Length: 109
Image (cartoon, rainbow, N blue to C red):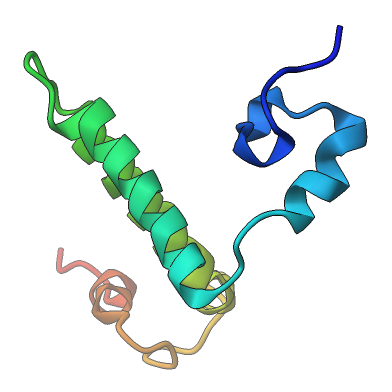
């Protein structure tokens, strides 16, 4: 049975795989169209997780988790360079390793 809803008005989850290329070409890729898509996404997120009658902390937790993952992805290269073995490095050669000088000192007896 053919769909009665025009292709342009269908949501992504309602589009069949064969209709996907033509559905993508019908989207509005102007700056105002992209801004409108982000606005609709924000409004949907806000109304689903933040602006609820009996809310919880899950909406804020998702934003914080996304921030943590994004920050980790940005800092990944720096974090992998700092993961050397501290016992084989020269004392004070790594930045921010004040704990190295404390643990390397012998304890008084």
